Image 1 (tube, rainbow, N blue to C red):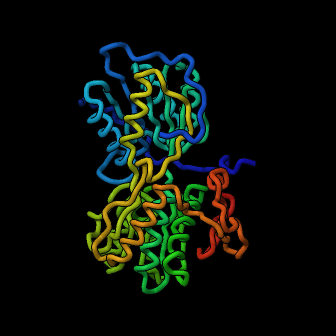
Image 2 (cartoon, one colour):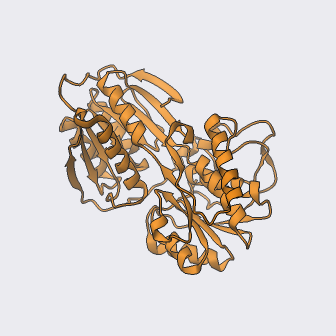
Image 3 (tube, rainbow, N blue to C red):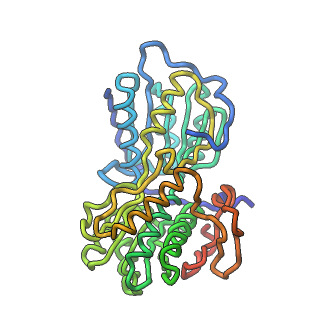
Length: 380
């Protein structure tokens, strides 16, 4: 059974939403067909592009990163595009209604930026064959629907390398959102990095079953500190973890965007998403009528993910080590799951000389060696 069918996301926000119009101014891993009915944009008319966000934009985190990408696209293409975003859209009935309305309003390219929008996107796309849809985090495609995701495991690995060098207790805490393959893959890649620089360190994981819940994230972070963690990281979207680390005089990593503002001394770096080039490229493809349905899963080398500037508290030799590994990821000479990779039981899952292939990464439901605790049953 395809374990992605077990992915369970919950509603991130209420049913209310705000519509805002903004006028300013990749490589495929799996190629599909050119959308057969997609129409080229009328001459001298800007391409109308819609974005659907699960939570308000704010000034940090997942949705903010996507909106920065939207703004980059506007800056790059100027009056060739006209963008609209709808924020605070839950993943139930509202999503399908909002996506449909964006299509009815004449948007010829629509980005839906949360996993729970997958089925609504597919449903609406069937009724608008002349509209191109791009869905983030999903795996269902159609002639006019593509999917995209960043290889977060690359910057995760780099932050793990730093954590291994910065911990004094040899206990690193990880606050997980949902125990789905994406989350498990991120924790495991982080742990691979930790073990590269500090084989004695252990990673302890607590799950909050939420993408954004500052109170729960803080509670989980405090629990991990109580268990001895002196470095924290997260797959959640608030600044609560970095704030707690700042208060406790320990270290932490941010996620999705640079979270240094929540704790200048505590914040070591953040795993960040960079969507601007991808959004620009897709808009240009629609305008030139060359868009294709693709599965895009790109890393640091393609400019889709990275780490933010490193805190200078990190020793120079550690920064050099991290930058060298980053260069290897860019050049394709290293992989976060280079073999040998063992699971928690010490069983070799990836032999020496091999890497964990994409299919197994996308279905990942096991922890690598060095992680303490079990994955909650029935969740991944």
